Length: 133
Image (tube, rainbow, N blue to C red):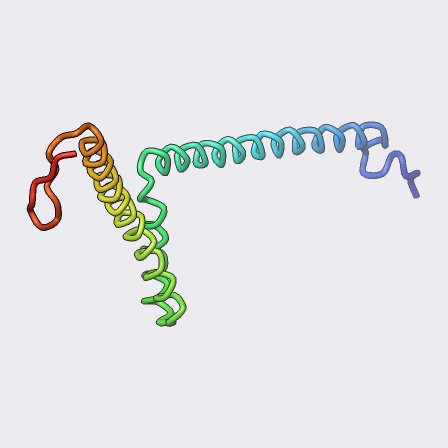
């Protein structure tokens, strides 16, 4: 029987050295794959951030589309509720901006009328009568 060092015609130091080289090669390849995966994830994250920043309506629309797809596939009432909630949030943002614009215009007009009244200009009452201050 041959000693352990010379088993299969390879001495122990050569086998150890070959194994260490394989481990190092595998480690380098694994690190490269991890770096590549991180680059892909960062690129996708940057693209999504830019898209949602440029088009803020995409997130509720994407959520609604996902909710509709899941609702159709599963048929669950909860999925449909999520879809309609996302659509309602999108509409409420749109309606909220319009209401804010109308209210700003109303307050501005009211302030202009009050300023005109304080300045001594003729201002019509609610009844249509002209009064001077």
